[in-house]
Length: 70
Image (cartoon, rainbow, N blue to C red; front, side):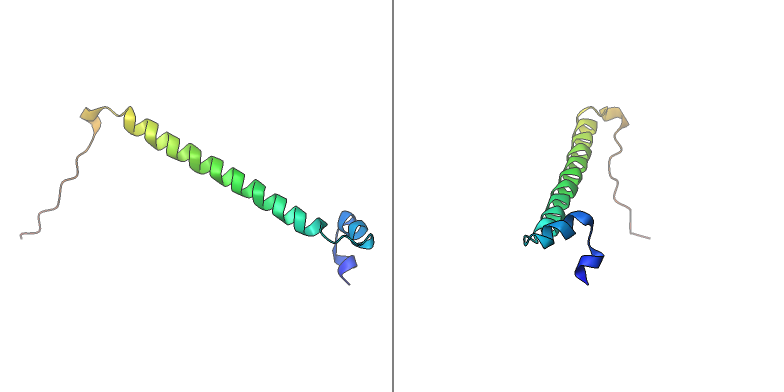
């Protein structure tokens, strides 16, 4: 039944006795996903650092604690 649910590459690999094609493809896709996610995170952190280093202090809004004495 498993041979009917697999792609042609996995079927040929399983027929030859080496059923590692599906495992290696999942591992490869995991590496690709982690690389893309790491690139996005790196880019966002870089944008945040550049924005804070080039920010004009006159445009910076300081945090003002709300007055709770009513």
